Image 1 (cartoon, rainbow, N blue to C red):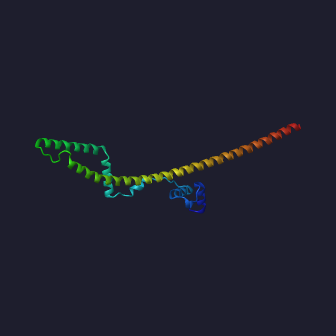
Image 2: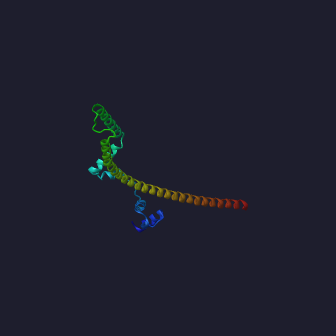
Image 3: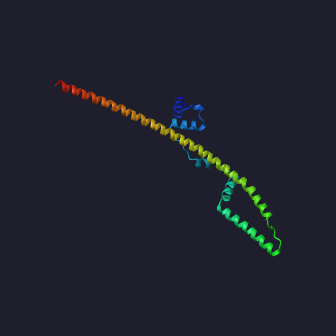
Length: 186
């Protein structure tokens, strides 16, 4: 960026260019070069193909957080309890009698596998959200600066119109004084 553009950016942002963070510098460059700062983040993410594990984690988190999973899970739990109760009543020996220790073991294993997978998916989503928030900050900062520039331009135009109006009034006053002087001479 040229020295002139540095001064323009510093005037807009109110800080030395080198002291600005990465996002403010990007906005300053876009402001001085008159380029848009907004971009399609979804298009940028399509270039980053998630790995097979990441896709599996996302699918697992999507399914694990759905009503379908809850209904299937409740159905399995109720079936397990009913099946064990029926077998216990008929043959007096169930494969997992009350308090269902085997069921608790399976549930614990499911939770120990499912929790880290869901966390991996949430970490990926939080990274995407962080990038989106940074982008939103840059767009909002540029919009704010553009609005400030528009206000300055409008204030400048209004000031110029006042100056023009005062000049016209002075001309009218001098013409009226001239007419009054001509009338008094006659």
